[in-house]
Image (cartoon, rainbow, N blue to C red):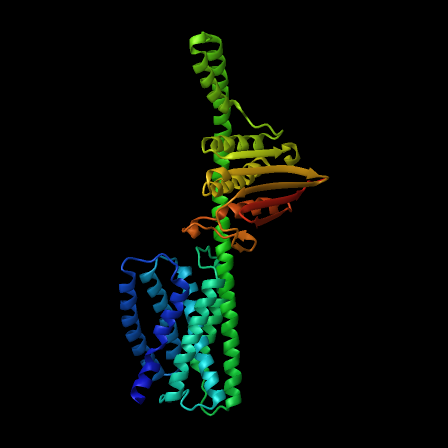
Length: 431
């Protein structure tokens, strides 16, 4: 039994590092034969680490330092082998693994010392400490997994290299110094507990920094995508403006030509039907704002072709303080989201209402439409969570709207009243 317990503590380091790393890195793009690779990594890296660690402990403190460096490199290599990731992503996820492993280990050791359990730091570990260590590891890893699953951002991220410096250096100093200089032989229980609490506090702080890096990196990635979408909308704006002008000019001329040429009674009804169809393209929405007219005309044509009723009451002149591109992006996203929502409800509920009103210097933009969500909307930071399966590549329309509104010191609010989705934007016109 003692041999088996000692063997467990000799080989557990790297499997625990791998498990802690996979909690965070699991959402990366995986390479082919992922699970087969995981099994191979567990066997090879565990055996290699056991040999390195056994050799290092027998040859002094600086060999232990070298062993820690090798373990970091091993984790990086493992991440490249299992996932498609960059070097700095590998650094981030390996630090996460080290932090979780070190946190669980030090919590179990602290509890053991407080409880007066023997065989905590010696080569012959006690059976009681073995069970305690296993239990604390299970609880700690599940706790971190749950926290990251429900509170962390595990989507795509854009890393800022400088932000990685502090947790990286902190992690390496903690893990290396504790391994090299953390000799507990002859130390009192109070001294050991004090040191362990400091290490645990450092691990928790480091984990908080890492969660912050995930949050900010995910936000930066969304901003990048939003910016790319805005660039595409800018190009689309120019194309749509020119296209609608050409279509309306041609259709206007064609309708006149038909009306003046074909006036025989026998074909009058057919010609009327043709000119009625042409009227659709000639009906430009006019709100006293060219950019708003363009996006409303474009979306009204789409709604007409898809049996969606679009009601607009808008004084476009009140939006003159916004740039044309911001107007096109803002209202384009509002109507795109509304159209997508009403296409999922029954035909009689396919109605979108949009209004632009002002009161003094305040400008209010309101949009409402039916949606199929059981009367509830999941919000995250005031923004609806996308209902699409591919959450990594959707849900940027609202973020783009928020950026436009915040650029003009405005406020965007989203709510649901039964099965009606409401969007309100309030902005203040400059003096």
